[in-house]
Length: 366
Image (cartoon, rainbow, N blue to C red; front, side, top):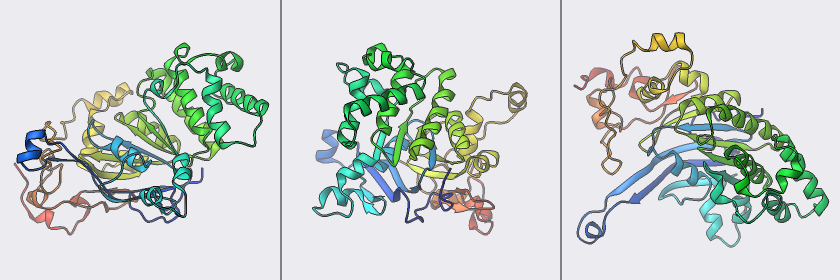
């Protein structure tokens, strides 16, 4: 799989990236009416200074607790959410400048076609009155005008068979309510791929499926990636799902916490030697399928000081994880760490990755 060798970090260093985000911020006003009239605004920092590249045929899996900002970041990467700070570029073209400019280098319509999304529940994105044949024919009619009716039909049947929906002629004549959850997700994936996208956002795309179907769906995503040459930005609250997809694709896994990207790198490096304390928390909280390994893990102490997640409206000063971190020191209350590359290619937003930082000379927090 052709993954750019410069995409091991989260920083925007690759000018040939499909999507490049630099210092992206997405802040929402959570104030009520009375507060807006008489008080101070209460911004929610859904995304707070994230830089990330997604390259050609790349796979990046973002994982974190609910409310960490991963879905907002994903929508921002796809041009569906306008950032309040920073920039989002598609192949070097600023997405929002393209939308507001008369003569951009890349037209906004082309950007939207190239950036597609597969939701957790695909039902709402399908017209219940259309058969699968019509749902899949729509993008082909718009973007593949070179195809005639028979060629479209042949392509639709071929992809339905490829994803295991056989006989294809039977499934092509079904309506969405006649499909299972897994079958709907397959149709949604095919429809997205028929747009010939460069990047697909898979937002919790397998979390609603039975456990037995999740691996099958992720394997299918990677098989179709080989056929269409697309990239995936995969979002999940389940570390196991993110680990499986990213590892199979030789991609990267990114850990998000309170709007920040706190660790990113190759799967084996991040999960065999986690550098950020929050990554260790996620791993500790993820069920272990191997009974022998699980038995050993039961003796491990919970790697966290405080289980309460801070209010995103009132994010702690300094490192936003320091109120829960078991190795936080006084420096962590005052300074906010950037992503630091330690002894490998992964990066973590933790002062412990810098052996010369003043962190080591200050006292541990109680």
